[in-house]
Length: 252
Image (cartoon, rainbow, N blue to C red; front, side, top):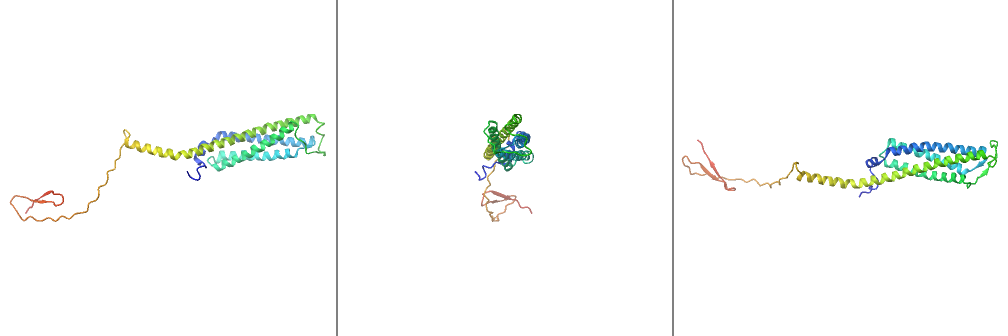
């Protein structure tokens, strides 16, 4: 096997690549990513302006994850529309989906900890834009928790879609590599069957090769004249190499 036997061919990759499913994943990630960032902006705004509470790690990881989500679905659209047979581009998109999977899992962890009361605030802010404190606004706190649950659901959808893309990539990669490995054997097998059918198949022309005879060197034959002449009797000459009798008729 060659050195690049574990890198699939572009044509085999394009044959097994499910364009419709990949496009649906990209569309789903598009809507989910914007929904997640919208909910996260609401979380940060309510937390800073109304509840006067700061969860710096949670706030930052939400925006970083949103940037990864945007990059992910844009890359999927580029591969699905423009370069379906490029294994390198698909590998790049797979890496972005791995990053999206990781950040979605981290964001799910933050959301879940806040809902269960396990997330500790970094500090309590008091500013001009801050209306009241977190403990004295039960209605705003319930809205805050509801928005967090919505972001949790969006992060779960993003995680599942990224995992689905990774699974499709692994499946297509294995099928394309196996197809490239078996293709030369199939071609040789087909060629052997085709040659057999040409020689022994019914209704097909048969071709036989006649072995070439070796070339004989030219021989010079010296004929001795026959001085004996008879009336009305042709002369006969015997070939010394082949023994054939040649009649010579003279006309005067």
